[in-house]
Image (tube, rainbow, N blue to C red):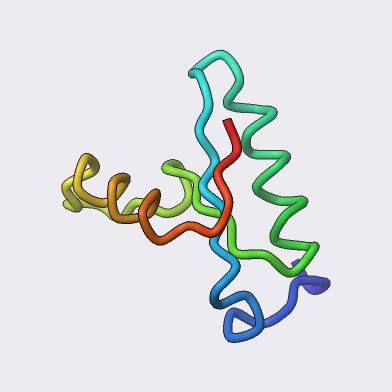
Length: 70
């Protein structure tokens, strides 16, 4: 999206998004809205890279997040 602030402006405002599988569409909408608002949301479907240990990465993201949405 062209309206998003550059990544360096989103640093330090990590928002972890936790959701149930049946709420994945709503979680993705929240993710997109937070990015447009200048925050740095963390959503597994967007933030995990292939081959990463998802359990470790999720724990690290939670610990380093300023906010947690569930």
